[in-house]
Length: 350
Image (cartoon, rainbow, N blue to C red):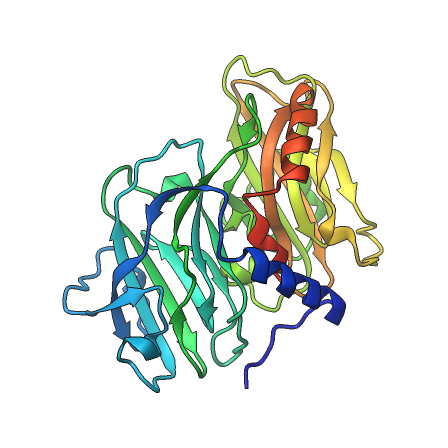
């Protein structure tokens, strides 16, 4: 019997499962690369298999998407790895997602050796995510333009079919929703626990962990952690970038947050000091207006995000993560809230 992922409520789970059944195998993004076809495949488990330099020429081949039970590996339960080399041309400003659909049961996904996401849990803390569509953001800096890129997928199957089952597997590109914005997707610095000094502009976060946003922290190795954590991102706006009349879009955060830019608080959602979650904070879009001239064009800036997660998954789990002019907010709101196409999977990101 599958061990189901803990859910907020039975009613919410039912709604999400119905939603997924209607949409999980279709994508409104532009498909950049199809991943249907033969992949390299090996039973067992070895962390070296995520290394793009690893020689997998002696591995067997398997067709994706298909359960490995249907590809000759009958009655096998346990670990297995998939690997595939792909070429891709892309604009660094594009938002690229690797979509694999359902995987039975748990997975970790690497692009050129970098972990971009995971779902479910591996032994000894196993739990299944067999019914959760996988959609993982790929930072552009992890990819080699038009050269061989290696996707490696670690899978653990407790029983049943096993493997990559989603129909529309591929790398998809999604629009940014802002013509004159500045994207904040990708790598952030990350640290567990809580210290208000971490909001400071000049705090040294060089020894912090790296994490990808948007994607909950459980997908990136911080399993079963509930409580405080901080995100920080340093970025340089182009010279001449207009710093007046800007809105910071931080997508959705599980559960509550406070946000600081260059050491100054610019917004919050929920009563983070009380640690009291009313139950709806994780679903609220974080759209914060920025005081004029707080940001600096042609120089480094720092965003710090203090997060409190009560239970379940935590962190900045859904985009968009972008600075946009206030004059484009109406256009963004119409596109994003009326047709939220690039993060539909995140409805099931428990």
